[in-house]
Amino acid sequence: MSDLRQILRAVTVPMLVVDHYAKLIGANDAAEVLLGPIPSARPFVTVLRHPEINAALDAVLAGEERARLNATLMSQGRGVFCEVTVTAMQLEGRRAAAVVIEDRSRDEETELMRRDFVANVSHELRTPLTALMGFIETLRGPARNDPNARDRFLDIMEREAGRMNRLIGDLLSLSRVEQDERRRPVETVDIAGLIRSAVTALTPQAAAAGVAIEQVGLADRAVQLPGDADQLVQVFHNLIENAVKYGAGGGLVTITLERLDHEPVMRGPAWAIAVADKGEGIDPRHLPRLTERFYRVDTHRSREQGGTGLGLAIVKHIISRHRGRLRIESKKGEGSRFIVILPESVGRL
Image 1 (cartoon, rainbow, N blue to C red):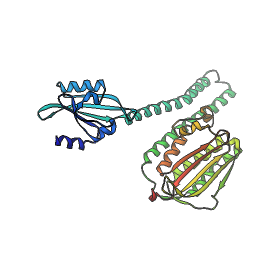
Image 2: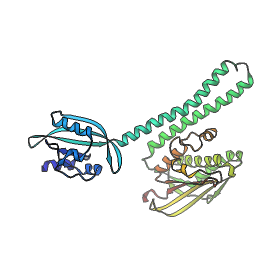
Image 3: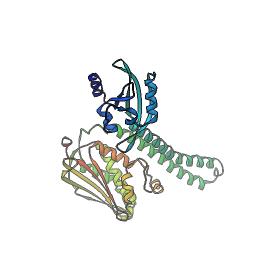
Image 4: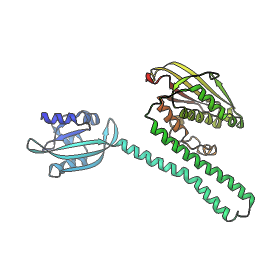
């Protein structure tokens, strides 16, 4: 039995061993983490009350070499999707069985996310494609000789094609960001300079929307931080552009740069970049989901503004790569504030 204990200790996935009487004679630490305390010398059916698993165990003890099945087991009050393998073995000359349980819940969640992602992308592309096909058909038929209708339809087609192009661009950007997320940036960048650059690029768009951009703590200042310049410009551009688009009613976007002597989560000094608008604000119930892919507070308005539903997801991944944090503060009717917090030194993380 000492050999059995060594084997159980060496196996990293949950494993239980049952003798020829279907009585539990051993379980490793991983099994107890998953299932809770497991007393030995008890009938297996009282330890794991799952009819299909017990039927598989009976079949293996009766002569089958292996049985495999999927099962949902309760662990710490929640259902966990698992793959269970029951394999015949010999112990002290008698037939026994090993029950190995592999947690597949993360695989299941990943597959669900993949299906949802494909469904969302298909939906986002289908809408403009359907519009384009309809307008093409109309231009080839009833509107063939109508110059006014032709010009109007071509304008709409250009807008829909641009929307698809932005969506594909954001999908590619999200893919690149996810690939890089585990690699820390090795370069040093001037964070204040990057913000000023993003503001300069967006000033004409803000002016056209009747929005003034105010910078606080940014003038003639250089703040050196570890970072990827292209990605951080993308973050600031996205947040400022969103503030201009969705907070235009307030007429003012304020960008502040502030040093934090000690940021508790990062255990050291950090810099906070806040982008605030005085628009209509966001209902607090939406805030936890804003960085989800394709999540929109107002789907129709977002599409009218040219949004793809991926911008904040990209921002979240970029900030994560920089070991930073994104905090969102907003109240309906009081505007919104998006705060990016970046560590002053990677070495302190």
